[in-house]
View 1 (cartoon, one colour):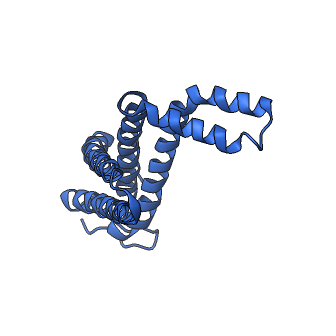
View 2 (cartoon, rainbow, N blue to C red; view 1 turned 120 degrees about the vertical axis):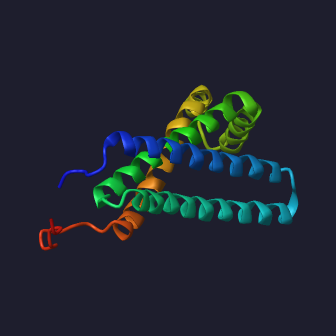
Length: 182
């Protein structure tokens, strides 16, 4: 079966959807970091609730994008909705990863250094000098590792959501489906 919607339409919608989804995720992340200043158990509870709201909100927004696409394009098939979901996941993953990289390199560069110092202090008694040198050499690579890890994580999250929602929104056609009457 071939796609009934053009790739240009799918990628145009996916770019807008991914931008919105990525910016919503970044906004939740920024607000969560502001909640990070609230200490104690209450701060931890607030951060967890905010994280849960972010996850549920992103899932609902992602589903809404797929449903809106199917309603806007009544001739859309499963493959079209799946392509939109995957493209949206990729574009939003790029937005989230770009923010994460900017955060580590420019907004809060001291956080990465503090985390690496804490790790080195924690593991100094268990690791030899060669391992400690390797750990200290990894510090400069951590922003790039984080960037690609975020892309993979966000894309896989969108991939799973796509394979959950797309078949329900635009069911797959089988060879047993009746052809449309002309």
